[in-house]
Length: 336
Ligand code: TXA
Ligand code: MG
Image 1 (cartoon, rainbow, N blue to C red):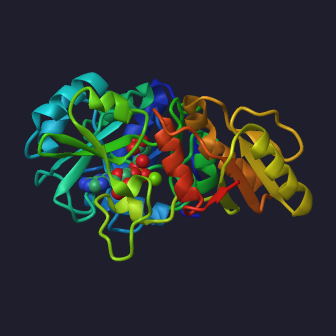
Image 2 (image 1 turned 45 degrees about the vertical axis):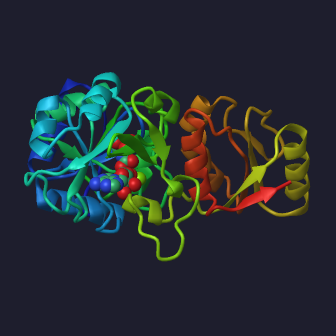
């Protein structure tokens, strides 16, 4: 235990204290509208290195740089495509991360050795205020231990980061619940590397939009990930997760059988009554996004060995829910 980790509710005073730590190259966990982030000065190599240590994150997995103004963006990148400008106007601050050719100001630890940098401007008030008070951009991955479900409350951050960082700012439950949409540009097309709350449908209004094949399929052996984060095991609780391709009565029947014949089985259904081993992760894609990671952590707390999850809708933010679930389940889908 390197630190006695403090948890402070967000206000002007705690935001000032957070900025103070960050200026000294320390790490602070901060709320964003997507999930909690583990922040460091993106331009300070040593500070950024501490992120990888605290999370146990592979060094070649690049970080997202969080900004509070378009002026900050200009210092980080070599050029800004026209489409990116229009997307920034529409979706920033908000859960959209765009990848640009990086400027020399961005250290190579931050970009995982790549010559590009991922940038987003959050909408969360606490996040924006802290970045403004720092005056420099913040590199921030999700504030979980590498491999675990991303934290959507300060309490979950504390469970993972207690003793590893000096300060967690509590901004309440995250609005969106899944990480930002990550895109890059290919000629005039938008290429989605990670789906999120800024959806395919929304992006399609701006330019031709395509979804990277790794979003719904695992990488084939030897295939190189465009987004290095895609190649790692992700979002996994201790329990074994399976996606069940069934709805309504079929889902209930299948799960009831497994719950009654095996030990420590839990079922996560979409808009169901919570009884006898069944938990509800919400009916709409928006609620599912908000609850998914929390429900996976809760399954562990309840001692589940197996978690059976009803397959979500794949439209809108549902695509992001499905993408995270596929990784939590190591791509195991049971046809019923
Ligand atoms: O919503 C979010 O994006 C949250 C909050 C804290 O802002 N952050 C987050 O960071 O999810 P992280 O580190 O857990 O995920 C970043 C993803 C990884 O999959 C990483 O590989 C990808 O973005 N990424 C970062 N820089 C990249 C780059 N230059 N090229 C391709 N992919 C990149
Ligand atoms: Mg993450």
